[in-house]
Amino acid sequence: MTTSPFGVGAYVLGGEHNPRALVRHADLLAAYADGTMLDRDESREAYLSHFAFGPEIRAHFAANRNSVAGFDDATPARTRGSRPKGGRRCDG
Image 1 (spheres, rainbow, N blue to C red):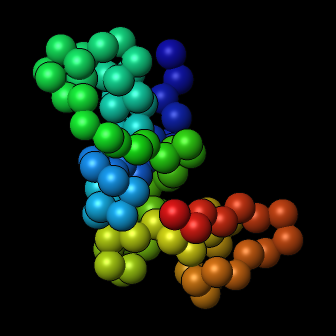
Image 2 (cartoon, rainbow, N blue to C red; image 1 turned 180 degrees about the vertical axis):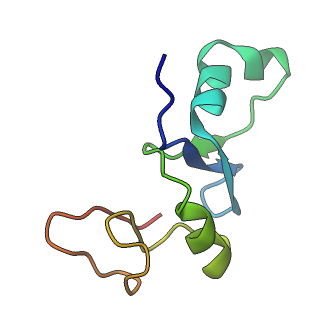
């Protein structure tokens, strides 16, 4: 099995306006999918990012008040909200 370099996800426990945390995306997705979270009596509202990010998201997250908003995986140092042609941007 090949390990993906894109293993970081953004997780929100509670409503969508609660703080984000960076987590191991695949592990948390599997825990919800296989019922582990229910076994732990964890049934609160929660959100896990659709995309998994590379390790460069950590520096962006720390520099942007624990937010993934404006992260551009094609060029992590770009100005918030800008996007190069063909690049992806996260606004969440």
